[in-house]
Length: 299
Image (cartoon, rainbow, N blue to C red):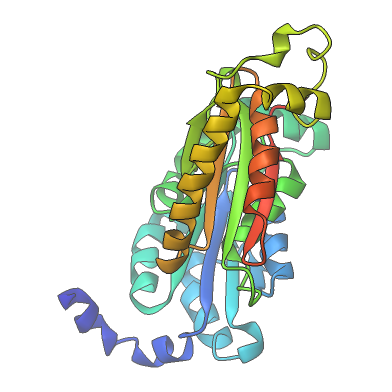
C-alpha cells in the first residue's frame, strides 16, 4: 500500500485519464497465435498496435487513452523487438503503477510450432533452423512469460477456438452476460489442457470404446450419449456436478470473475467426456452465461 501511495501523485493525471481503459500487452512465441489474438481484441473494440518499441509504450497509452473511442488498447510485442526486451521487466513494473495493465502470453509445444511454420511456409523471424530458432525465441521472451498475467497454450486450439477464448477473456461486457464458461473435453493420454479452473476425471464411467458399434463414433453422437447416460453412475455424477456448479457460479460472478474453464477428461477424449460436456452445456445455458464448447481430442 505504501508503494502505491508514493506513486499515485506521479501518475495521477495518466491514471485519471485511463480509469476506464483496459491496457493489454499481447506477446508469445512465433506461430502461437498472436495475430489471431490481436485481431480478436481489435474486433472487440480495442485500439491495436503491433510491434512498437517498448520505450514508446507509455507515450502511446498516454496519448490514446483519453480518447473515449479508444479506451481499450492492445499492444503486440514479439521477438522483433529483441533489442528492447532487456528493459521490459522494469518497463512493465513502471506501467503497472499507473495503468490497468494485463499481459497475455501465448505459447505452443515445439512440434506444433514446427508444423505450423511448415504449413504456412513462412520463415521463422530469427531465421536459420526452425528448431533452434524456437529454442532461442523461448529464452529471449522468457521475461515476458514470467511477467504475464495469463499464459495460454494454443497447441490444441484452432484459430477459431483461440479467437473465442481470447474474446471471452478480454471483450468488454456485453451488458447481459455475467460469466463466460469454456467446457472442454479431452483425453488424458494426450495431456491435460493448460489454464483450467476446474478439472474432472470421468474415466470411472463405462467406456463405449469397447462396444464395436460405438468405437468409431464420438460422445456427440446420440447413440453414444444415450449409452453413457444409461448408467446410474453417470446420472448420479451429473447431479453432483450440476449441484456443485449451481453453487459455485453465483459466487464466481459475485467475486467479479468473468471467465472460467471447466475440463472433463476420459482416456482418449472421444466418447465419455464429450457426452458429459454436451449435457453440462445444456444444464448451464441461460441468459447470464455464455457457453463455449471445445472437444479437443475428437478426431
